[in-house]
Each structure stands twice: as C-alpha cells, then as structure tokens.
Image 1 (tube, one colour):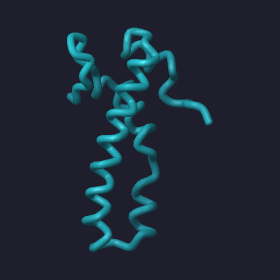
Image 2 (tube, rainbow, N blue to C red; image 1 turned 90 degrees about the vertical axis):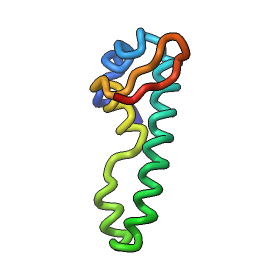
Image 3 (tube, rainbow, N blue to C red; image 1 turned 180 degrees about the vertical axis):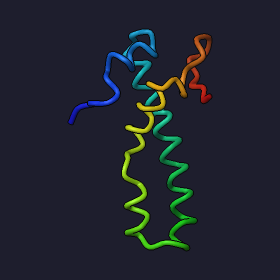
Image 4 (spheres, rainbow, N blue to C red; image 1 turned 120 degrees about the vertical axis):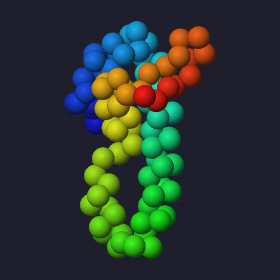
Length: 86
C-alpha cells in the first residue's frame, strides 16, 4: 500500500521535511478522528443499520489525517511540537 494522494512531497513541505514529525502529526490526528468516529458510530448504531454506517465511512482515519495536513488544516506548534487544529 502506498500513499497516492496527497503526495508525500506535499506532506513533507507542511512539516519542514521532517518525516518523524509527519508521522507524529498524522498518528495523533488519526487517533482523534478515530475516537470521534467511534463516538458518532455508537450514537448512529441506534438510528442506522451497520451496512449504512459502513457505506458512509469510506475513508480511513489516517487518510483523512494526511488530507488535513496537506490542506493546512492541521499544523504544529514549533515551540512544543504539539499538533494544532485550525
């Protein structure tokens, strides 16, 4: 499996060409997205069938995180290296 979109070069530009920072940012954001989706899924199960929920959730949290980083929606604080959401 490889990342096709966004391109790795674009992602590295957002992290000053630091691969470890990119991994850290993406994993933290994917974890937050996963927690958010899990909470929504618990509420949605009461209203929808599992098949409908699976269709609505066609993108993986890590792919969503990479997309947000590439779009500039997620960045980091240089003094603390904490992830910031815009």
